[in-house]
Length: 70
Image (cartoon, rainbow, N blue to C red; front, top):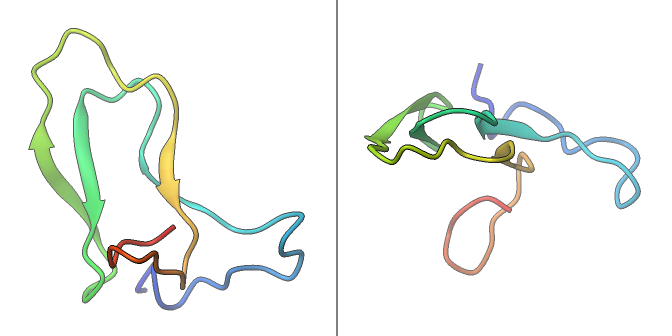
C-alpha cells in the first residue's frame, strides 16, 4: 500500500483528518516517505543525545509549495 497516495485524507476535513507518522516521538533516527513507493525509509541516523520530542508526520494526498506533503 502506498501510504501517501492510497490513504484518504479523511471525511472530517478540516476539523479532523488522517495523518501518517514518519518519525515517532522518542526516535533517534529520521525517516521519510518515498512518494513513488509510499514506503517510509530511514533518511539518516541522528547522533544527538536528544530524541525527537513529538510525532512527526504528514497528511496523505497533500503537497506544499516545496513538494513535500503537509
